[in-house]
Image 1 (cartoon, helix red, strand yellow):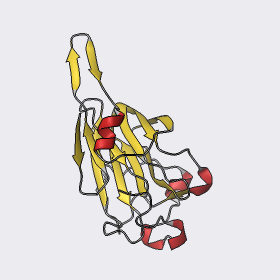
Image 2 (cartoon, rainbow, N blue to C red; image 1 turned 45 degrees about the horizontal axis):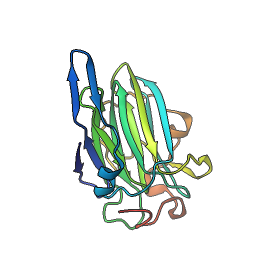
Image 3 (cartoon, rainbow, N blue to C red; image 1 turned 180 degrees about the horizontal axis):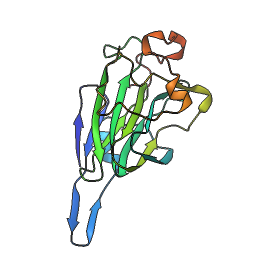
Length: 188
């Protein structure tokens, strides 16, 4: 497993070794010791699985009082996955990193607490699986507008399907400071 640092400190791109033959493939998606060596010291407490169709965009989400780190991957299909630093006072505030995660490259991404996360589905269907370092806490969930011009995410598609919550999210610069995590809040 190769763990690659990205342009955002703490956000990691993980490239697992895939062993394949005529029968199929095998890969290791998580090994605690490797992640600890890479600086991911939180314990994962919850696994989630979502299925979405082409053009569905979920995000940009984060939890304020129970911040979650997420280890994400596309088990089937393809997504463009994004992390945004939303920690007020961070030198990387408002910066983003994105990568395609799909069932061919088998790449994963670690998004630490204090970062907003989202993805858009590029294939007909995508099964998106992720481990979380804290439990889902809907009362503290926040959303940043997916196409916030101040962030400037270069989504590969713009004809997207959004939930009501995500379509009514605020741009990052319009969010009250009490709705943003502070830097360094549960960070590397």
